[in-house]
Length: 124
Image (cartoon, rainbow, N blue to C red; front, side, top):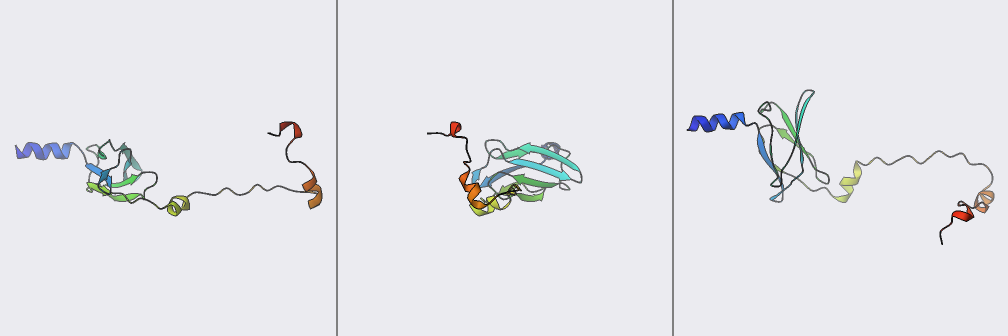
């Protein structure tokens, strides 16, 4: 019986659970990485996932969820505890667009005198 359980464990792949504050995190992206190879799965409603048997301890695993810090570990990690990002941390990675490079001609008074919106399209 124990040989059968041992075989089932190693044939089923790597399994784990993603939580935050003890609460399951459904919909987390779980990525197994080895070199250029990537295998993806998503956590279920209980925050659980299973990776295929080809994924073993030699693979790196990464857990990503919008609004949480990315977790990284090995294929042997079975339990992942996510950290909620602060508002500032969430916006730190956002790329802010460059303002458009607009050439202006004329004086400031001429620019102010010109309406920016056609009179016929103004909202009332």
